[in-house]
Amino acid sequence: MAYLELNNVCKTYGQGIHSTEVLSDINLKIEEGEFVAIVGFTGSGKTTLVNLINGLLQPTSGEVLFKGSPVVDTSHERGVIFQNYSLLPWLSVSQNIAMAVKEAFPKESKKAIKERVAAYIEMVNLTPASNKRPKELSGGMRQRVAVARALAMNPEMIIMDEPLGALDALTRGNLQDEILKIWSKDQRTALLITNDVDEGIYMADRIIPLRPGPKATLGPEFKIDIERPRDKTALNDNPEYKKTRNAIIEYLMGIGEERKAVSQKTYELPDLSPKSFVA
Image 1: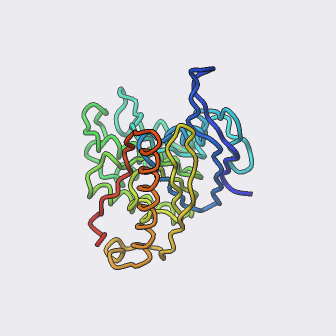
Image 2 (image 1 turned 90 degrees about the vertical axis):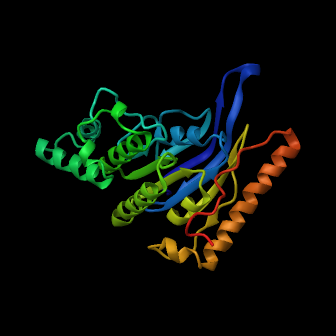
Image 3 (image 1 turned 180 degrees about the vertical axis):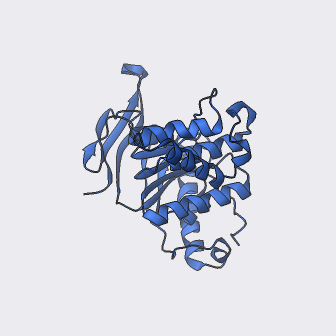
């Protein structure tokens, strides 16, 4: 039995002639301790997929199972790092994180909660901003708060919806490493939704493209056969890295050309630009 399982999942918005099937026949299995990345085009339905897995939405048909049980609501067992921060504006950085920690650990002492909150604020380099409210923070700082909040709940599964896109390159790289460190320590299950091919290859065990809709569906998986822990500078000369990256890019560009030929619509490709560790 897979840790997370989606069986024949479809999601439709609207009714009758105004209905749109956003996701169609989604089948996905993620084993316990596995790190999977889904990469896709802008507007392809990636966030809808995340909301189905987290229980914020219910599928029109099919089923979403977590540890063998249907997902019918949200749970702190599945920690989500959202793309849009989702911080409470009237609470400070520490208060935003503490509220989530109290929900996940209702029996912990005030001292333990305070220490946990402080540790995760320090992890994302926001200790000087602990008492600031979201409106006093930059977009990148707000995203770091969202990352700290999700990880501080110690979820059994980490679900990330393009969480690092608003960050500068240095902070993004540091948080990639922190997330990988936390993941590898307890080998908890992780799902990363991203539009950055390099990020997916660096972090995941396998990458699965999401073909754009309407009726978006998952494409073939690409296994990342690169030994962990991965060194970004070493990837520059890694033939397996280059081979995998080229295969994914070729597949995604093929989809873009195919859809453009059918609908005359230009699809915005995922981020295919080389990063600093790519030759």
